[in-house]
Length: 499
Image 1: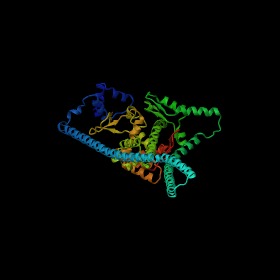
Image 2: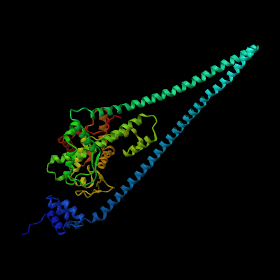
Image 3: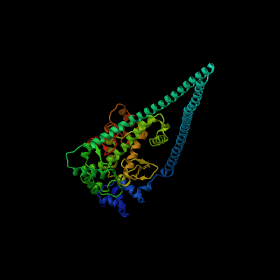
Image 4: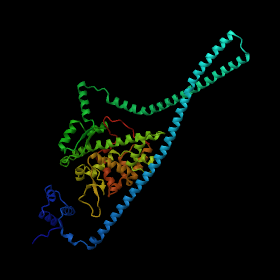
């Protein structure tokens, strides 16, 4: 008797009959495909499955058209809301620009009147000199006349009184001008002193960095020169899309002496930026070596983005402390409001959203979502964090529910994926708890740790609390908390400011 074939075996027979290469490659790799995966691959190759003939008439003729109409209505609602938001933003910006234009006009008017007043006051010294010369000549003639002949006493008294009155008026005017100039100079000195006080912390930090980099070592001079050359070679090393193999990557790490134990001890990482993962990363048999290679590739990208955010926080604090901002600072603020999706130019909301993501959380989520850099989405689209998209170009998941029409967002380089992930956590409404807990830690002057904040990311995946438990397990097992205080080599050190 013939053995009755299962539904999965029937699908495999169909794949053999139609010579589907994708299924054959999976069989050669000795990877077992489920019946759902086989169905997706066969439908992708436009092969009719026998059970598809038994589809429900109502589903084909009523439910699917209705779902399409509902999707179009949802898209129309989203487009209308976006246009309304754009119009409201333009109105707000117009109000801000008009108010700023009025204030600048009044400020310039006040400044110009002050200049005119100062110019008018500068006329008095010249006028005084002419008056002095005139009366000096008149008095000399008068005294010559007194010497030669007698003078009327009444006229002489009037002349002397007028002389002293004129001298008193001139002295009052000159003293007023000098005191006004002294006040201007003192105000300028105060402004310069304030600017110097603001700049002092940066100078101290740079001095500390110089001291740490120029500490004397008990080694020969030749060895020191070699070490300096190595640091110059590693500084901002961006590797292009060259389809690098894992062997090449590992040899590069050996050449530049890139070791995770050293990073854990020195708390600095070399600025080596990969644009993609090695295609054969999954072929590494040693699991520990595979994980370390993944961390070495992703860690500099995460640290670099965090340092950019700290620079922006430092700049924001300086702008907020000023009474008058420049046009460039206003334009920078507008860009940050758009980048962090802050409505109504709310500075307090921007302070909450513009903050770092803990390195341990970013590494754990990258490892979970990309399979330690070996998933199809990570290798084909540089998608480290598995972000979804409904509009742009993306990668179609094989195991996807039929009711969902999402794709995995594709990126040109790995660093773009890291930046999009940080913007997602800092702007999306699903992660409000994450941002609030981070703000509370800032207010209490506590360090931002990944294990504490990982509990707030249950909305990142459909599994909810199970997902957060897996993240905590990855952080603890791989000692990812050691990378929290890591900075880039030769970078300006910024403190995590509590705005």
